[in-house]
Length: 354
Image (tube, rainbow, N blue to C red; front, side, top):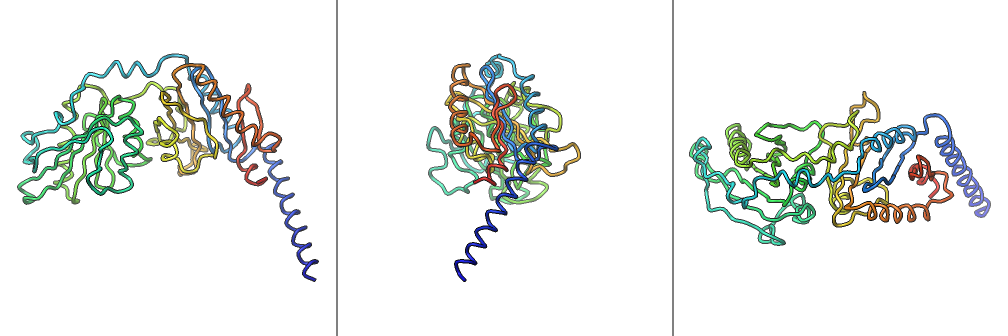
């Protein structure tokens, strides 16, 4: 009796698997080709693609738009050459004379190299590894107090020299998210959870209010404006942003990454296999609505572009990625090679098969 029951359950399991596989085949061969699509392609010094594409057709359209935007030009030298302010961050700390009563409550302190935050406990969200991944050079910090709020410090100002405007842009946008509040301080500053953050030139500025009060928030904004006024550079806007599609991009979702570690910190739902960044590579990405009327963003499509120092490095990286996924997925119903040799994978179908 036990053997008969087990056999029935095994047949039922196989039947259900066959139905699921059949449905997956139907999705990838007809209709809108719904699924969870990954597409990756190589062109000149770039590897670009889509993660979490809603349909094969939509994924191909996004890929085509990126291909049109990409030009074989040096995107990094433009903003690097524009850097004007290169002083040590401690020289950008306001002394309080222009801050409506806010004064430094102690002498400033600094961190440099691999010593960031080593002498104190910090939250996991402030891991030094994140700053190292974006080229951290030096940090200066000081606390501020105001007579109207007593004698205790209530604001912490930190200025990070990240080495390049791209790095400052990257660490700033690591913290941004859609529909958050912004304040113009000479740059676009984000306000979230008691923090005010912005990037200008090669600097990332983080201001923390220890308590919630209108006067403290006004003091944080005054500090931000004073720091921004000392930095001659415009807010960093990497030229790579022009490679991303504009239609349906979700405001506040743009990211920049310089390593696969940082990429995984930004996105926790990426496929197991992604192109591997070299030391000199830099990537840009953003979320896109599945349709113009969509309100959510956590399940949106992700478009990415990775710039390598030369075409040979980009090509070898793409070849390595293509060989890896090809070996794992060749012959699968979820794996195709289309779009002029691009890799196109239906991750949903792959999950069913596995």
